[in-house]
Image (tube, rainbow, N blue to C red; front, side, top):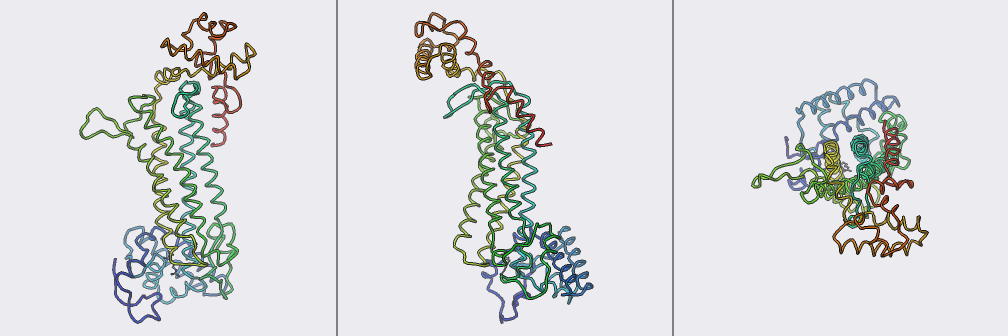
Length: 464
Ligand code: ARG
């Protein structure tokens, strides 16, 4: 970065001396907002074309500006652009370079514009791309879960509450639960993207401009639905970034729950799944170890994403209208969260695609902990017309008996069962198996393989 200690070339007219080095350090955002170079150039080209169309600058000036900006874009892409901290941010770095390249016409680009509407526009364009990227990544993740669900639509596994075995469920059902979560995350992203898609450009510093600009034209050129209606709001609104961070936090929360399940399931104590070598690491001291590091890091990413959400909420809280420099602190939070979320989504997609459910272990675990006790109680209600509360009591006594004998419910003899409830007959054994248990749960949204297959079909059609 090249720096000179004169007053700022872009706004230094009323300044006799250059900024203190510390002032420059706290003020500069070029270290991070250079990530918005492409958006800045797109915004400026749209602005210049509009200025010419409205007769505010000449077409030849607009053409020179546009050409110069494209040259700058290729310099940036080639890594040859001379970024300068003294020029503060990406907007002034690019405008200053444009002056070097094309001279006087460059000075006309900032007509009827301010860095305030410029930065709001650039940042919106950047965040909008992230919404789109996250939406695409969520589709890929959902497809990975669908693949797993298809493979194990009728594979039994224990369902848990309080991490205690509760009732048997199907692997497919468990996988489809995540499809539902990530589908909601996707719809949150789609909602927020639609809400944010208004153009701040032309709001100028805060009050609009006296030049006869055409905000519809720049809005359209940049793919916005319409110009933002209020200039004060347009330059000071950052709730689109908060919407992104909120959606990212919730999505990362969902990712962390699956990540936690992977950590638990892949442990030697559970052995429910094998995580592929591609997403595991070894230990430098314990040769036998295979650690689910990717899952643990996905689980942790939610921490920094939540942190960014709270940081930006706190930055924005209490800011008077319109722009304040506080708002420059918006970008790093969003950049970091977008990077973290995209990486976590990609890692989870790979892990889910690769993971192998251990069918035999899942089946054994599904049957432990008297997981079909509810099926037994339901049978007593259905076959013997017992009130559910009584059935619950009788089942409790049978569970206690099995526990004392050290056996499972289906291993109790009919005589033993009849000693608790004389009307129990042989049919009861049909509901004590885990396959029968899951197959019987055909209520809407229930775990039966039949339901799971219907849901897979529904989501496949949705995602294609
Ligand atoms: N770098 C600034 C930001 O990110 C650009 C806007 C500066 N506007 C101003 N009036 N100082 O917010």
